[in-house]
Image (cartoon, rainbow, N blue to C red; front, side, top):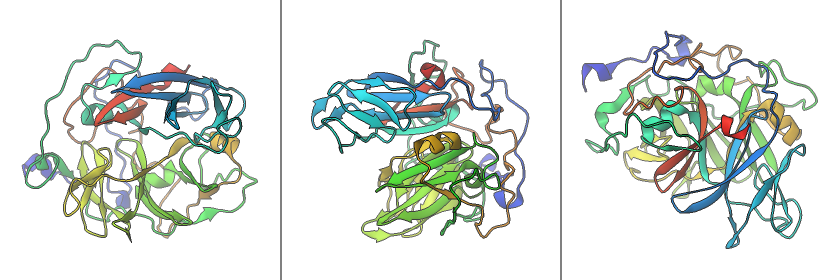
Length: 379
């Protein structure tokens, strides 16, 4: 591997070194707002859209800090929707008279008990979407493309170019959490766990149970292996691309766990499964090296938003606490100003300067192509 590919990651979480290096002037927009005060625009807006032959609805709110997308087809019927404000967790109604909560569940009307199918959508920094899906469409955006990208092919048994895979840390130097513990007092705001009420959490809901995983813990561990009843899953989080996914960790009827391989592709975390030691790409949603090469991850719906929103959605939730078994200062972001500056730690395949590199967007993936949605579209 070329010498430039042998960079040893200066951000080893176990050493708690900040990556707040100076900005690169590669984007015309201002950096994303990092003020902890929540945005005052709490209106929910709905966009009915289509991409690559798929009709779907995207619902979002800048104030409530969420964007989600659902297939518009339910029981082979194409539905249309309207946004509902002031009724969280209810966010929209359909043309048949049913209302839906933020998880796509019909809570009344003729479709009561039915659930919309989530689109494959991930929140993440703009630069990461541009790197993995060069030339992707931005909803309601007319800024000209400056780089259409080039074709990317794998090498040496990898589905991605091996020379573009960087060593970020030693395997498991960033320790995944195997048995998370949870905050038990649901009547207070746990300031010992969350810096403030607008802190971002990754949440899942399964069979009526909700579990939340704070960003400030995920920044230090990246992967959490957990379960709800019979559903075994892994939270996969990448601080460098700002992306969170939830994968089923039952592979070929065998329950396994995921760990942090220490490798990075397009600055994005590359987990490995402990069943076969295969390497996966989080944003490509598949294994890219090893026995399971080409195997797609089985994704579960994830809601990434702030804690304030989750309190409105459901007070009956479990919030992961900081009793992880590791000595970390969870009140501090080990990446310093990285979430708001223009720094990209490692080379990426493609750079797209239409947006600030750290602007958080929702990427919707259809048949290997992606379309991006900005919070500004939901003002």
